[in-house]
Image 1 (tube, helix red, strand yellow):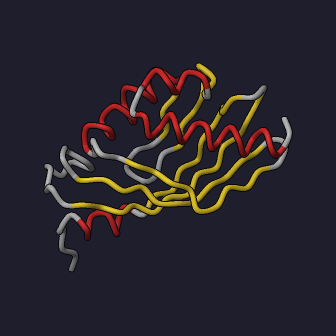
Image 2 (tube, one colour; image 1 turned 120 degrees about the horizontal axis):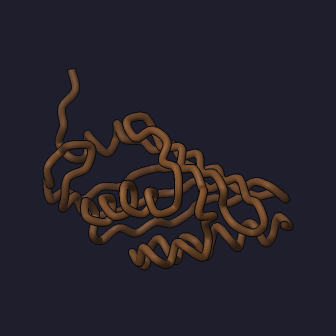
Image 3 (cartoon, helix red, strand yellow; image 1 turned 180 degrees about the vertical axis):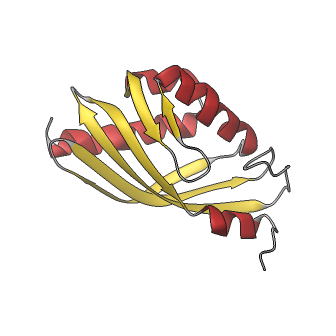
Length: 139
């Protein structure tokens, strides 16, 4: 695929993310995809596991979830984006019960693209800042 196709794939997939429709992800991911999560999450194998173990709980924790990219870059095989996710901590996240506090989460993603869909996703999230925004105190 071309770099422009891969950039558009990222942009379109973020529309699906913001829709909070789990089945909307099917259009963008291979069924045997691998999600390499940030520390504390580990690797998730398979699209159905990704939707059930990552996205469904995340949507429950932040029901007003909204993500926007600041930068998207791509070549013929890879795409990457960095941006911010905003939401209200309304459900359990990282074993922390809902605080009702707004959060702004910085992230970076790297995707391997094969045959026009994402096959792997490497995710980095600033969970330290998110925990601080939730009111967690560190010594």
